[in-house]
Image 1 (cartoon, rainbow, N blue to C red):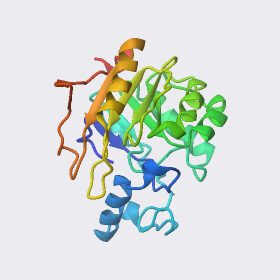
Image 2 (image 1 turned 135 degrees about the vertical axis):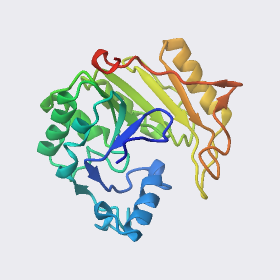
Image 3 (image 1 turned 90 degrees about the horizontal axis):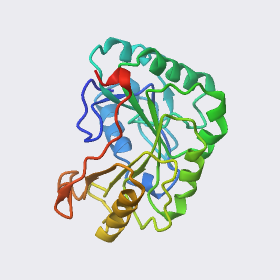
Image 4 (image 1 turned 60 degrees about the vertical axis):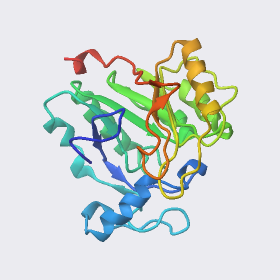
Length: 251
C-alpha cells in the first residue's frame, strides 16, 4: 500500500488483501511475490503469512487486512488508485462479504478513481450480480496470451463503469481479440531477471485493434532486466491513452 506509486497508469496503491497463488503463465515471474519475500525478510507485518510453497511461498499467503479499509478516506486529494497490487480481490479465499466492504469504501470515496484487476475472471462473473458497482470503479482482467481470452468474455458481463484489459506481461499474440464492451487496454512486456521477451508484432496487433475500435491504448513498457530497460515507445510514440476519470474524481 502506498500514497504514491511508480506504476505508470496509476497514482497510488491500496491493498486490503495481500498474497495470492499461481493460476496461469502470467504469474510465473510475479513481481508481487518477489516483493513480498523481501518485505517478509524486513519484518513487514502484512507479509508474515506463508502461502503454498508450490504456488506462492514466503510472505505470500492470502491474508485479509480489515485495518486498511479506512485508508482511502484519509486521502483527501483525488487520485487514481490501483486496488490490490499485491493480491487478487477475487481469489476464492476472499469472502464475498469482504469484497462488499471494499466496494463500499470505494463508493464512499467518490473523489478517487479505482482500478481493480483480476485473473480470476470466472469468479468475478459469478459474483458480479451480488455486488453494487460504484461509478468510480474500473474493473479489469489480465490476459497474457490467447489461451486466456475467455477472461474478456467474462468481463463483458460485469456492470463496471469501465471494463479494461491488462495484457502484461504479454506472452503471445492475442489474435482474435474483440474489444466490444471494453473501455481501455494496457499492454507491455515482462521485466526481471527471468523476463520472457515480447514481440513487436503482438503489441502492434493490439494497438491496431484499439485504434479500430476507438479504445484508449496504454503501452506500459518493453520490459527487460528492469521495467525501464526497453523504454515505453512503440513505433516512436509513447502511448498513454486512458478513459476519462469519473466526474467526482476529475476535480
